[in-house]
Image 1: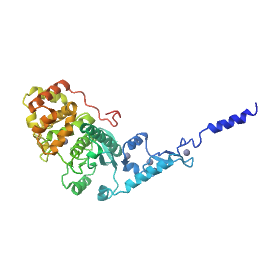
Image 2: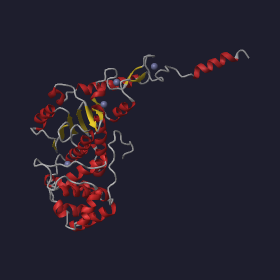
Image 3: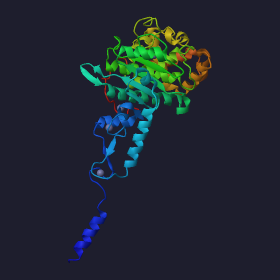
Image 4: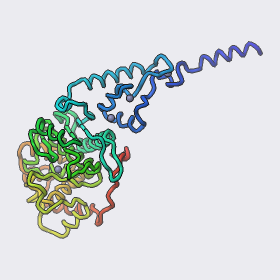
Length: 387
Ligand SMILES: [Zn+2]
Ligand SMILES: [Zn+2]
Ligand SMILES: [Zn+2]
Ligand SMILES: [Zn+2]
């Protein structure tokens, strides 16, 4: 019996995994500065300056294991640190102009700055870095939906869209003057080439309220994206107000659960007051009035839409994107070529404008609820299976 014992011990030694238990043989451990939730956010975006500036991990989210000499993930950690450091070392025009570091993230479609200490959600506080990641996530959701609708790939957009949120009025004013060539203190965007949106979060219209600013960002993000798709050209003043504003409302509604934002030119609120975008109310209005909507709507520029026309633009976009999705890309390209709705819509959808009106109204009656469901609560982390 005796000789068996050393043999068994030797066999056990051979099968025992080598390396360090502390790091599960990786050679690295998670950086303790990030919670599990933060780690998830950082993995969703290619770059975040807050993570990249983390002193212990340099944005790799990993640090050397204190119990061993390294392992298979040590090289990857080093690569990730170097990539984050190289990104951080590139000059950022906003940081240069304001002469301080900013909380900013790069996603597939956006360059996002959320220069905010904290926002409010009712009585709750929302941390600025958390908000940056929630908005980044939802902007990418809107972008993925839009890409799907138009069959768009990365090469179909010339430049990323820039979105900036500033808590201090003077910072919004400083970047407005330098990069948007405007002295307006309200939220402001430039569409088409190198699209950009900037807003002062404490503006009396937004009062640092996270839910309001979140939906504002998604609505305008949809505008920036569409204005840069296929061509760097905004169609909102090329007779496609319905497509431009319809898209703003639609992606906001899809991602947030309700559209509450609308764009106006410098003159203030649209004629007819604040648009009511609830589907049940749109259905009621259309059923009550038999006056044709589309002949007027399809000619308007974005800035000319009345309150009701905002709602109908949303609904018409809802119908086209749901029932005739393949028509959206040819329509957008047609407006780029400065063709008119009266030419393009029959060509893309196979109906004249009166048949379109009939088909759209019939779909609204069939698809929209008679009463409005309760609005979704503002959620910090919507379900990941959103799409
Ligand atoms: Zn170890
Ligand atoms: Zn981050
Ligand atoms: Zn870290
Ligand atoms: Zn809009």
